[in-house]
Image (tube, rainbow, N blue to C red):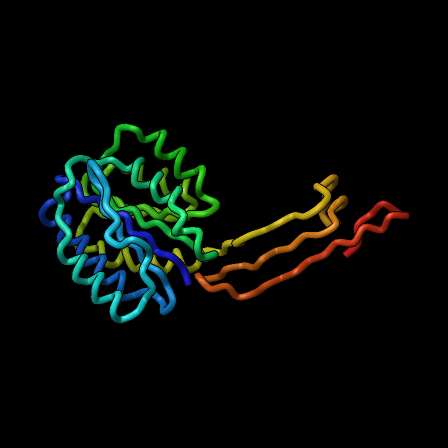
Length: 235
């Protein structure tokens, strides 16, 4: 189970075959999600637009709505401004309502003027959001590669638009194979010393689960008890 945020370039340069291919790929993508997944569609150009107020759960009614919305997408949003929509996503409280994997799929054919600032923004939120980038035709290949590196995701360069559908499904499969530790809390004393076998100076470590292939599969509680007379930790 995961939240899939599709951030699609709707700038003027996407007009024609590029937008048509993106629409076809998006239609395939939304119909390939696992039951229980959440999907959010956001378009950007000179400005940006959330096509729904919050991520939609995967069900027949919502999929039909998304299909209708996707088919009506136009390349009519001016230039390419990526920083603002990403900042909005990272700061939006709706993505913190569910403790599940959050994957952003960026699809663009453009270049941006504030590349380094945008890359730093992606990197600063990579522990919570994984970003996968898909660049088509005359995209800034450096932006596509480095945004995925900073976002701890995968990148795809599409020179032939006929290959876009295949890459979209590959991106979805790769996002579901990521291993993510969802939350770790360390209570009481801070870490004083750590070696290969023992951690000293912690009263309790609680690991709130691992996520594998988008599904929360295990909850693990680990406790380390301090033996005061020896001043050592023992499991």
